[in-house]
Length: 184
Length: 334
Image (cartoon, rainbow over all chains, first blue to last red; front, side, top):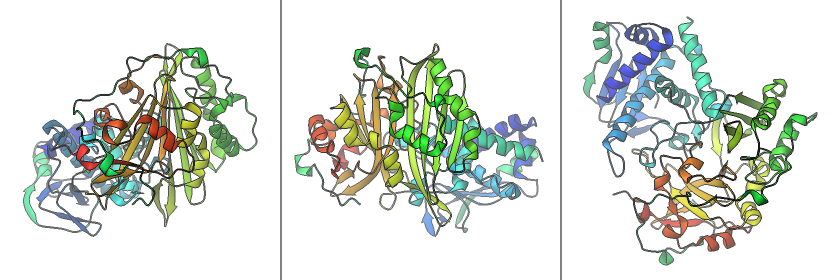
């Protein structure tokens, strides 16, 4: 269900961005066809950076997203919080997939002023990565531009930004990046 | 997460086909675990500031007006400006006085950055905006292998400055990669007047101290993942709060945070009555207190053996490398 909603919301946002029918916009942005569709695979585990994970998801290539166990209600994390975080996880992965499909655009060439942990929407403590799905703490403090881009893509889909100047700078960057796709 | 190799496929969802057919700390620890209170904090505890109003009688300022400057080295000028907090005292922040300053002050401040002349200096990374209800600037100081960023946001209401928020961070570049850094020397110099010891020395005991060691994210246990620990000093009678975010370490059933290495953020509102949830609503750091996670925070005396007075006595010493210790059992959610 989280996967389906992620796709619907992404298509809707891309439709608004481009002025196209949402599904046409989705297929154009991700370059899918009837014979070469976007595939979401449910897996028990996946490999990332040499480690095996049984939680979360990974984008394997330009049309393949693998999902292990997504966010679950636990402790103070309610079912609603878990569902939103799971949905956002899938949208984040679609952000990666987008960069694979438009590699010539260098969409994830994010400027240094955005390679940090500021300018993200608020999240509750029990679902802290709701709007910053891949914070630098997952990589021992290294901020990977591709992960920052994927989370800004998430912000673009839901038009949700952190307060203040850094949030505004993120919004401006992803707006320009998405416009560069539709200009083609 | 991005790419890597394939693994066991249990179930395949062909969404696109549907679419196609549809159209470790080494420092001294101040709090032995055996001395810590055993009372469990209330889950529904929400700190509040609604009963406090400051009087503006001691809040007179003569800040530096940044737009009047005729500097020849903008990078040095801005570093000195930040170090001196615009020649004013909190809750006045970077020369901007909430409750006293008006739209013209905010416009004058931001116009310095919006002129475009600073972008020619390769040692600075400037991004500024000025909108009807708010404006702000991010000032990046770029060094060869490191950078320090200061973000200043100004929120207005009825043409007066209602709140000023500062966020800051440092990073280093290693082998073409950017890493967040808590021990950047230039960052420490830039914000030395906001160091924990300096704040306690100049402004005295805070009215509240809140702490929260952030919980583990699923699939990313600690160790090896290092999570933040936030310490928030609330000066309700002075109209500002300051947050120190450091790394959350673990030892012998305790979370430990050492504030001498931390990133700093400040919210200043001045002579207003302001609930704490409003005071933190403009923080946008993943590792920061905010209006959605505030109920997770606890008063320091409820979850450590430190009273506010003990904290003040220990950490006002600039040579202190002490750490805060809080039992993990207070922070488990099940």
